[in-house]
Length: 211
Image (cartoon, rainbow, N blue to C red; front, top):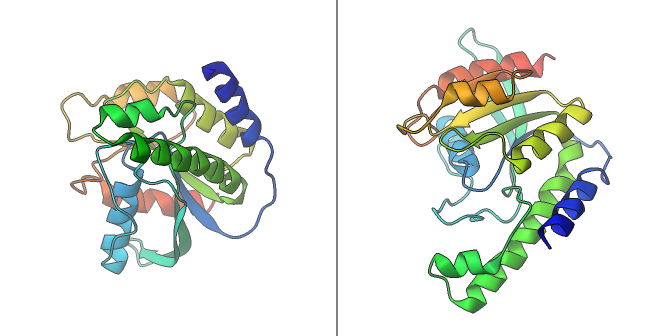
């Protein structure tokens, strides 16, 4: 069952190929801190959040967009983009995992259906991205099938990528391991929750935008 679902996900990555508008996408596995980072960016520059967060996986199950978001560099340059926060990419979504988190069976099955649709929608949006932040949990093994699948498909599309190793405030975080896993990309360690090193992320976005 898992192998069939994995094959299905891989096919979806290759089926959508129409470029549309200038967008900065936030991709990554569930609970890596994508929406926390999106909220931090929106709070810094707009004074508002983009979405809700939860310790339970797949809290974000729909693509969320903040249009015409403007940030400024230290030297006064301005960068305007549409920020796209996507649902966590997963090769396996089982409603029983939500049962273990304390949900009722009905809510667990509904969340699993919505999460599966969210993965499909995130993949549909992939070809529309001009630049992507791949947000990974720096406390987890970076060599996961999901991470490699995301990075591989971005590389195939030649989309500029910044790997964001999140949760560096936690003792188990290992930035060097994330860097070793994806040496072809710049990797920046941050804590989206506490805003650690996010200013450096903003400066790096200006470099990516010029590629």
